[in-house]
Image (cartoon, rainbow, N blue to C red; front, side):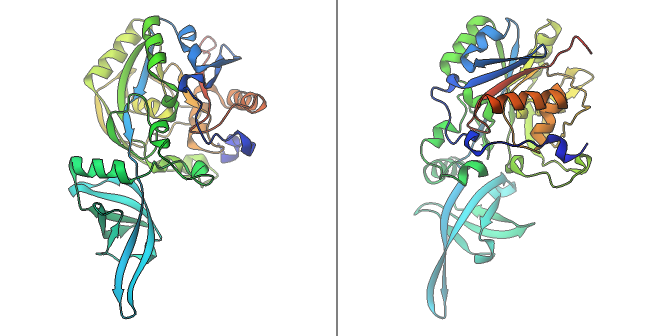
Length: 353
């Protein structure tokens, strides 16, 4: 298939710059039985059935955007340069791969100072990225990052406003636990304590998996033939408990509905012959139309960027023509798009298959 098959025109004013408050008040486009229904996220307890299981990604987003300076002594005296750092992924020995701008302004072996307590040395560079070694590790590093860093907002938001303290709450899921992501599993941002309690009262179950969302999630597809696209790899884990819970729900006839494309990609990566296995490692699974889903019976997800791999994923689940109709309806009804936008619940029609 061609990249143009997943394109659409989006009015700029439909890109959400802040989330709905409270979280559960976001609109929800329900696609079920070949029909579209305009609902809200707080309607989920009425939409889902007792025995259904939601799969939630419990990754925690790092405040991975850091602003610092490089200081240097030269023949003309002391000089400095402002440096913008976005952490991408941890490496061995407490080092990090990072996007450093402008990389040409700093040499290997020099330090970037972010605060009186936090700095990092440039150890090397690889394919346009820098390798950084921080002056703190472990809990000390985590605490300093929380106080010094900013949330790494998606480019389409960051281009319109800077991250602020409110984003440290807004761009983090209610159940975030395992630190390691540099982007949020945004479908999960619609949940809060009250909604979780209502779903539990309805008899809906939850399982937690971990996929550390990387900055590569925002990388554009640059090839016209999508079969030539190479996905970025992300680290994930499905525990024995999560695998057992999900398999038991399937055996009992309940539906497995991942909340977010990250959770879906992870459980499909860990599936073998229609069963979910405990799993840990990196996945670069690329889900496009024609993919045979083994575990997921549906998907709760936000509205995605044109020509993105996530548009290809939802098209694989629902059908290319069906997704075009869903997105045309969302645009006509002025749903809010992307990370801080509204949500959809996609339940593919299985009666005709």
